[in-house]
Length: 78
Length: 478
Image (cartoon, rainbow over all chains, first blue to last red; front, side, top):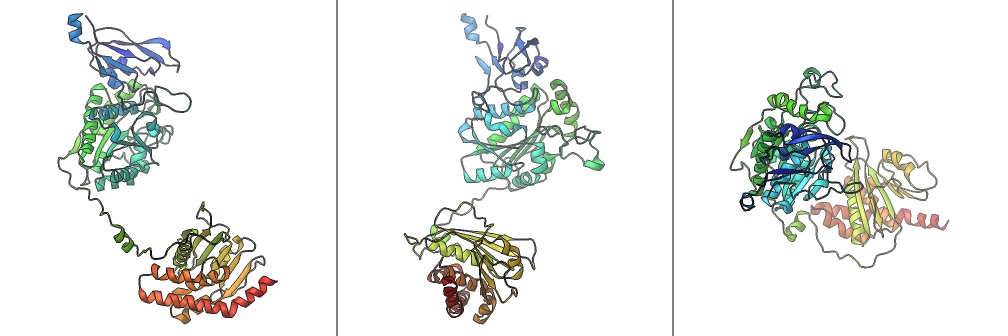
């Protein structure tokens, strides 16, 4: 079954960790790798994402986080 | 299915110095990004992107035009509401957003915002309050909390020295005209989602032409607060929110005032209002005249300003380009007022005259002030009725004429400047006497004044013929 998930543009992440703190399901973690701007960017780990959008709204960057909600019909047929 | 993604209101890449980037110029954890996203989302949802004009302030969000694919105007410090006023009045279909920080809005721009609110201008104001000057490096702002440490209040803001923080929503709520005032917080995701409703309400009010809508967004500035982004959001909720209560201050359905657009005047009414007329035809061919940089200077009340206008109008009627620039000091008595007039066959760059080639000195202080600025070979007409001394300069042509006495004999001392002007026209030939005679009736409303001024022109021409003409011809021959 298809699951909800988020996409993170790592080059747009500034490593502020707000999403890490905000996610109710602890689906976002900060790794030790750094991006071109020198920020420790965050990664998504599937941990029961509900596509609530909290990470999207707390993130100050316009395009760093995209939230994708699983399409239920697709899940049934797939 | 994409549920939340970068709103289409933003540019795909943010073009700025160097190659386009996809991230903003804001620090990690900054509230501007959150506010931008909310506004961008609402604009996209309402489908008003093509109608929005975004007025960005001075401050960190000065580059909002990098991000928003809407109309953009970058305004001078604090004046975004004034610019927005003009935009929303001039463009009926526009949805005008004024986006300002606390230093911009509550500091230098306090007057602009209060008056825009008081007039109930049609605009949505988004006030980003982070209690500090962000861009300049963390100085005390009008909204800085008591005890808050900033670079200019290193031991904390003390009300006895720096006053109390200003609460803008409460202040604006004292005014009658605004229709919507709300304070929201960007403290956490739930608060941000609630803030979106306020942003939407403010913009909907613009769509429905309801009036002035003010949304204050409490926003973190982690760098200048010297906190981590997470600490900053917590401080925002725990410390700022109690002082700046998050609530709807006002949300009224019917605007208390309706904007009344000014009456559009017909051409005929405009001509009447400005006592203008098109009776004189502007000749196609113009005479070649050396560029005239004229300074007419004297006491206030001697008519130097109107003489300048006469002269510029005469030049325009003869097909020249001309400018007129008044200048008067703060002194009400004894100082000099002066008008700068430029007459040229070519386009005129600046109306300033710093090195005149013609000086009409109506009183002694004027001569003292401007004698040294005249270019060598220039012409000086001195009102010998009021100026007893001669020129110190020997490299200029000096004409001494009892201008005030001539005007007095005609019956109007205030016509002295017209006398001087006529003498100048006679001597220089820059404008023709007939033109002056035609322009004077157009510039003066009272008929009696027209007559006496025309008499002054005649008297001046007479004086020129009798006393100056021969002497000038003689000196030119030398």
